[in-house]
Amino acid sequence: MGWAMESEQRVFIVDDDEAVRESLAALLISYDYNATTFPSALHFLARCDRNATGCLIADVRMPDMDGLELQEKVSVDFPNLAVVIITGHGDVPVAVRAMKAGAVDFIEKPFTEDVILETVKSALEQSARAKRHAADPGDGAERLDQLTPREREVLEGLVAGLPNKTIAYDLGISARTVEVHRARVMEKMQVRSLSALVRIAIAAGIEPQ
Image 1 (spheres, rainbow, N blue to C red):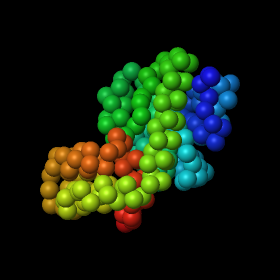
Image 2 (tube, one colour):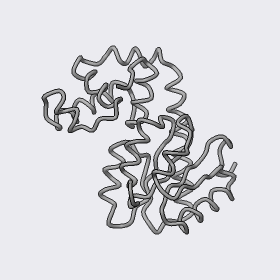
Image 3 (cartoon, rainbow, N blue to C red):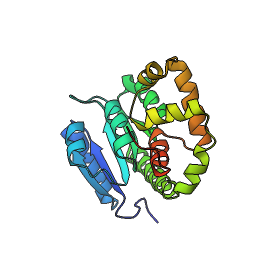
Image 4 (cartoon, rainbow, N blue to C red):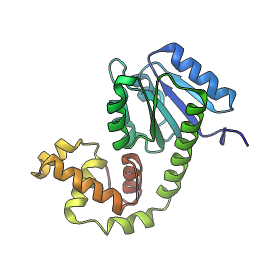
Protein backbone atom coordinates (compact mmCIF):
# COMPACT_ATOMS: atom_id res chain seq x y z
CA MET A 1 0.00 0.00 0.00
CA GLY A 2 2.09 2.96 1.22
CA TRP A 3 1.30 6.64 1.23
CA ALA A 4 1.63 7.60 -2.42
CA MET A 5 -1.36 8.05 -4.73
CA GLU A 6 -1.55 8.26 -8.50
CA SER A 7 1.40 10.11 -10.03
CA GLU A 8 -0.75 12.74 -11.72
CA GLN A 9 -1.89 13.90 -8.27
CA ARG A 10 0.68 16.52 -7.46
CA VAL A 11 1.77 18.40 -4.38
CA PHE A 12 2.70 22.07 -4.73
CA ILE A 13 4.81 23.58 -1.93
CA VAL A 14 4.87 27.36 -1.51
CA ASP A 15 7.23 28.68 1.17
CA ASP A 16 9.79 31.48 1.19
CA ASP A 17 12.04 29.36 3.43
CA GLU A 18 14.17 27.32 1.02
CA ALA A 19 15.16 24.76 3.64
CA VAL A 20 11.53 24.04 4.54
CA ARG A 21 10.25 23.69 1.01
CA GLU A 22 13.18 21.56 -0.15
CA SER A 23 12.96 19.21 2.84
CA LEU A 24 9.22 18.83 2.32
CA ALA A 25 9.74 18.11 -1.37
CA ALA A 26 12.44 15.54 -0.61
CA LEU A 27 10.17 13.76 1.86
CA LEU A 28 7.22 13.63 -0.51
CA ILE A 29 9.32 12.54 -3.46
CA SER A 30 10.73 9.71 -1.34
CA TYR A 31 7.13 8.44 -1.06
CA ASP A 32 6.65 8.73 -4.84
CA TYR A 33 4.64 11.95 -4.81
CA ASN A 34 5.15 14.44 -7.63
CA ALA A 35 6.28 17.49 -5.62
CA THR A 36 6.98 20.96 -7.04
CA THR A 37 8.28 23.94 -5.03
CA PHE A 38 7.77 27.69 -5.35
CA PRO A 39 9.58 30.42 -3.36
CA SER A 40 6.53 32.72 -3.21
CA ALA A 41 2.81 32.88 -3.82
CA LEU A 42 3.37 35.09 -6.85
CA HIS A 43 5.70 32.52 -8.42
CA PHE A 44 3.07 29.84 -7.91
CA LEU A 45 0.25 31.94 -9.40
CA ALA A 46 2.35 32.79 -12.44
CA ARG A 47 3.55 29.28 -13.19
CA CYS A 48 0.98 26.75 -12.01
CA ASP A 49 -1.62 25.38 -14.45
CA ARG A 50 -5.12 26.53 -13.46
CA ASN A 51 -6.44 23.04 -14.14
CA ALA A 52 -3.90 21.30 -11.90
CA THR A 53 -5.28 18.67 -9.54
CA GLY A 54 -3.69 17.91 -6.19
CA CYS A 55 -2.60 19.47 -2.92
CA LEU A 56 -1.18 22.94 -2.27
CA ILE A 57 0.89 23.37 0.89
CA ALA A 58 1.37 27.06 1.72
CA ASP A 59 3.08 28.82 4.60
CA VAL A 60 1.07 31.49 6.39
CA ARG A 61 3.84 34.07 6.65
CA MET A 62 5.35 35.03 3.30
CA PRO A 63 6.30 38.40 1.75
CA ASP A 64 4.21 40.02 -1.01
CA MET A 65 1.28 37.63 -0.54
CA ASP A 66 0.72 35.49 2.55
CA GLY A 67 -0.74 32.00 2.68
CA LEU A 68 -4.30 33.14 3.42
CA GLU A 69 -4.33 35.58 0.50
CA LEU A 70 -3.00 32.79 -1.71
CA GLN A 71 -5.74 30.48 -0.45
CA GLU A 72 -8.38 33.03 -1.48
CA LYS A 73 -6.96 33.17 -5.00
CA VAL A 74 -6.65 29.40 -5.26
CA SER A 75 -10.24 28.80 -4.12
CA VAL A 76 -11.46 30.64 -7.23
CA ASP A 77 -8.71 30.28 -9.82
CA PHE A 78 -7.45 26.75 -9.09
CA PRO A 79 -10.67 24.82 -8.37
CA ASN A 80 -9.06 21.37 -8.34
CA LEU A 81 -6.50 22.08 -5.61
CA ALA A 82 -6.99 21.26 -1.92
CA VAL A 83 -5.13 23.66 0.38
CA VAL A 84 -3.07 22.86 3.48
CA ILE A 85 -1.66 25.72 5.57
CA ILE A 86 1.70 25.59 7.40
CA THR A 87 1.69 27.65 10.58
CA GLY A 88 3.90 28.62 13.47
CA HIS A 89 2.53 28.29 17.01
CA GLY A 90 1.41 31.92 17.16
CA ASP A 91 -0.43 31.60 13.85
CA VAL A 92 -2.80 28.82 14.91
CA PRO A 93 -5.86 31.14 15.20
CA VAL A 94 -5.07 32.36 11.69
CA ALA A 95 -4.87 28.79 10.44
CA VAL A 96 -8.22 27.99 12.02
CA ARG A 97 -9.72 30.85 10.02
CA ALA A 98 -8.11 29.36 6.93
CA MET A 99 -9.86 26.06 7.61
CA LYS A 100 -13.19 27.83 7.98
CA ALA A 101 -12.52 29.37 4.55
CA GLY A 102 -12.01 25.92 3.04
CA ALA A 103 -8.49 24.72 3.83
CA VAL A 104 -8.25 20.96 4.37
CA ASP A 105 -6.04 21.27 7.44
CA PHE A 106 -3.18 23.17 8.97
CA ILE A 107 0.20 21.80 10.02
CA GLU A 108 1.86 23.39 13.03
CA LYS A 109 5.66 23.74 13.12
CA PRO A 110 7.65 21.76 14.00
CA PHE A 111 5.90 18.89 12.28
CA THR A 112 6.67 15.19 11.91
CA GLU A 113 6.85 13.17 8.70
CA ASP A 114 3.74 11.20 9.65
CA VAL A 115 1.70 14.39 10.10
CA ILE A 116 2.74 15.71 6.69
CA LEU A 117 2.05 12.42 4.94
CA GLU A 118 -1.35 11.91 6.55
CA THR A 119 -2.43 15.48 5.79
CA VAL A 120 -1.30 15.33 2.17
CA LYS A 121 -3.10 11.99 1.73
CA SER A 122 -6.34 13.51 3.05
CA ALA A 123 -5.95 16.61 0.86
CA LEU A 124 -5.41 14.55 -2.29
CA GLU A 125 -8.46 12.43 -1.50
CA GLN A 126 -10.56 15.59 -1.06
CA SER A 127 -9.23 17.01 -4.32
CA ALA A 128 -10.18 13.82 -6.17
CA ARG A 129 -13.68 13.77 -4.62
CA ALA A 130 -14.30 17.40 -5.51
CA LYS A 131 -13.22 16.82 -9.10
CA ARG A 132 -15.60 13.87 -9.40
CA HIS A 133 -18.49 15.92 -8.04
CA ALA A 134 -17.73 18.79 -10.41
CA ALA A 135 -17.88 16.37 -13.33
CA ASP A 136 -21.64 16.00 -12.79
CA PRO A 137 -23.10 19.43 -13.60
CA GLY A 138 -26.64 18.04 -13.66
CA ASP A 139 -26.43 17.21 -9.97
CA GLY A 140 -25.05 20.69 -9.25
CA ALA A 141 -27.86 22.31 -11.22
CA GLU A 142 -30.42 20.47 -9.12
CA ARG A 143 -28.77 21.78 -5.96
CA LEU A 144 -28.77 25.32 -7.38
CA ASP A 145 -32.53 25.11 -7.77
CA GLN A 146 -32.81 24.71 -3.98
CA LEU A 147 -31.26 28.13 -3.32
CA THR A 148 -33.33 31.20 -2.49
CA PRO A 149 -32.80 34.29 -4.69
CA ARG A 150 -30.66 35.90 -1.96
CA GLU A 151 -28.58 32.76 -1.52
CA ARG A 152 -28.04 32.72 -5.27
CA GLU A 153 -26.80 36.32 -5.15
CA VAL A 154 -24.36 35.45 -2.38
CA LEU A 155 -23.16 32.43 -4.36
CA GLU A 156 -22.58 34.60 -7.44
CA GLY A 157 -20.47 36.93 -5.31
CA LEU A 158 -18.41 34.02 -4.00
CA VAL A 159 -17.86 32.66 -7.50
CA ALA A 160 -16.67 36.14 -8.52
CA GLY A 161 -14.05 35.91 -5.77
CA LEU A 162 -15.54 38.70 -3.66
CA PRO A 163 -14.94 38.78 0.12
CA ASN A 164 -17.93 38.69 2.46
CA LYS A 165 -17.70 42.41 3.23
CA THR A 166 -17.87 43.34 -0.45
CA ILE A 167 -20.81 41.01 -1.07
CA ALA A 168 -22.56 42.53 1.95
CA TYR A 169 -22.00 46.07 0.66
CA ASP A 170 -23.21 45.19 -2.84
CA LEU A 171 -26.38 43.53 -1.52
CA GLY A 172 -27.07 46.08 1.21
CA ILE A 173 -26.88 43.53 4.03
CA SER A 174 -24.50 42.88 6.91
CA ALA A 175 -21.35 40.77 6.62
CA ARG A 176 -22.80 38.50 9.32
CA THR A 177 -25.90 37.92 7.20
CA VAL A 178 -23.66 37.04 4.26
CA GLU A 179 -21.92 34.46 6.47
CA VAL A 180 -25.29 32.91 7.36
CA HIS A 181 -26.34 32.75 3.71
CA ARG A 182 -22.94 31.34 2.75
CA ALA A 183 -23.28 28.54 5.31
CA ARG A 184 -26.75 27.68 4.00
CA VAL A 185 -25.51 27.71 0.41
CA MET A 186 -22.69 25.31 1.27
CA GLU A 187 -25.12 23.04 3.09
CA LYS A 188 -27.59 22.97 0.20
CA MET A 189 -24.81 22.50 -2.36
CA GLN A 190 -23.39 19.67 -0.19
CA VAL A 191 -19.82 20.98 -0.03
CA ARG A 192 -17.40 21.60 2.81
CA SER A 193 -15.04 24.09 1.20
CA LEU A 194 -15.28 27.30 -0.80
CA SER A 195 -13.16 25.83 -3.59
CA ALA A 196 -15.56 22.89 -3.98
CA LEU A 197 -18.53 25.28 -3.95
CA VAL A 198 -17.03 27.43 -6.70
CA ARG A 199 -16.13 24.38 -8.75
CA ILE A 200 -19.66 22.95 -8.67
CA ALA A 201 -21.30 26.34 -9.25
CA ILE A 202 -19.22 26.99 -12.36
CA ALA A 203 -19.88 23.47 -13.67
CA ALA A 204 -23.61 24.09 -13.13
CA GLY A 205 -23.54 27.25 -15.22
CA ILE A 206 -22.79 30.17 -12.90
CA GLU A 207 -20.19 32.32 -14.65
CA PRO A 208 -17.55 34.31 -12.71
CA GLN A 209 -18.15 38.03 -13.22
